[in-house]
Length: 232
Image (cartoon, rainbow, N blue to C red; front, side):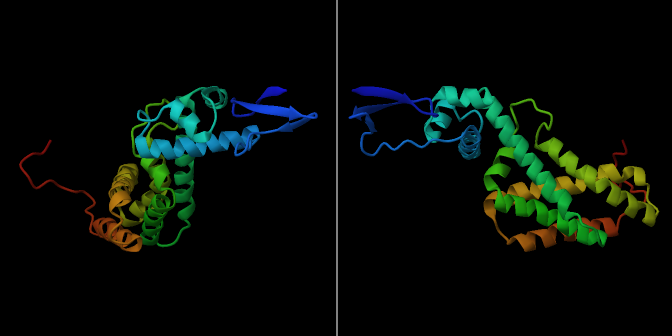
């Protein structure tokens, strides 16, 4: 007798029964996953494809094929490609934000700059696929938004540090949010460049970033002035 068994991939597999026992064609061992395991597998597959080809270049069919499941399984877990992508992006953004904010452990302000620079470069090194996804504009509306909004979140963590430093130096602490955006943006853009070239080494990149940022802050004027003809 021949029967068709449906596994958690949503695909049918042919089995035969001999004396009441199931036999399976050679080389077709079925891998059963829990719902949680299948969800994580789809996230891993989707993450790799989005990093390589981008959101538009990745299809549900390809995600399903790489995972060894049928399309309905992807829809069942995420409602479609958009839902899967949103979860991938949200995870990466939280990971990066946690790494940067967790690295700011205190100390001299210059050391804090080093910690922030290293945190971003560490993330790029450890989660290259994730960073490639984040630096692309997200086509999915989500609470965390885009990479730009993530940079803004990180800059918010730096505002208080800069505010205290500004106050100690007699500068206007109300300008700290703007300078925080400038500093974090500089590190983020450098990280995007380093993503592909990977030269010089990470520690050297961090040192040069801090060199520009710190000495720029060290020689900063309380009331900067324009030297060109344009004044507005």
